[in-house]
Length: 352
Image 1 (cartoon, rainbow, N blue to C red):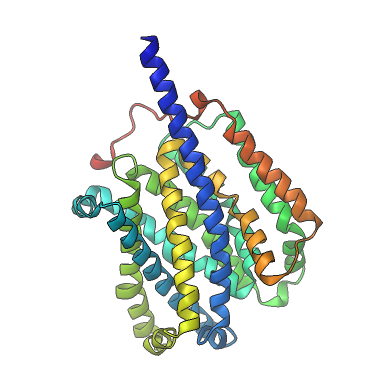
Image 2 (cartoon, rainbow, N blue to C red):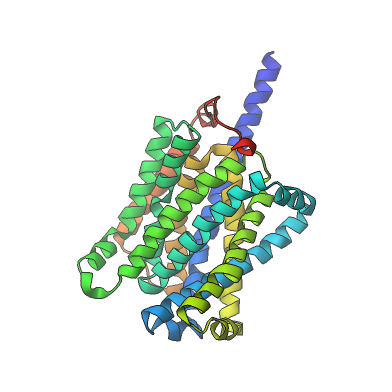
């Protein structure tokens, strides 16, 4: 009996550690995504549309997000093929009771969160876009607590709080400066930031439901299959039909080498960022996975500082210390406390 318990403890510890590793890998790639995600706004045709009317700006953001989702799906198809999981992909896509959760998550993660993040980047800037979405772990952890009854220990709650406080301390001075100028016209960017925070938080909670009974590599591919479908067959045609915007000329103009280079780089970083994100949820829970991945805010500032040569101010060091310490507090929690415990009367995914 002691041997069995020891084996279970080692297995649990192994899963917990890998859950943190995957979440941290997600944070690094998520932070890196803000570089190509910002650079694409400076390429034709998006630089002209971004400086135009509100309608042109929204069209540019929609096309960037749509092409970005296709780029992510391309890399996820390569990932699925490399893992030889096409059979599992086909089986899961036929199980609509499971696949529907990924399709629903795609609504919040794509047209809501990713689109909102591109709005925030284009209208306010990448630094604000990063801080705006830092509240998403609070949304995800709250929904996971309500839906799945995930138990968040006091230590885990402290770690989440430190990470969020650290993230806000990085950007607070600049954010307060923007809010002191309400006539600056940046309201659309702030709406986009709110969309990103809510969208990614809700998506994580929804995905956590399906990941209990499906493979995360297949699940994330299904999620972006749904998003690509929404953009290409529903959203962009609806924009062209109801607004009269010239969608296809913008899409065709985007197929230039500079613009597509940044879109593909953004797609690669976001694809494997999402792989780490989804893999962490079954191992350490939605709340903890999202909290560790929220370290992307630190990595975003680091990568943006390197590529723009715009060095961060002193408050960045304070925020960096708090966020790293918050992650350390969660990482060093006892394995027994990190096991995801849900109520025994929770309805199964397949029957929901």
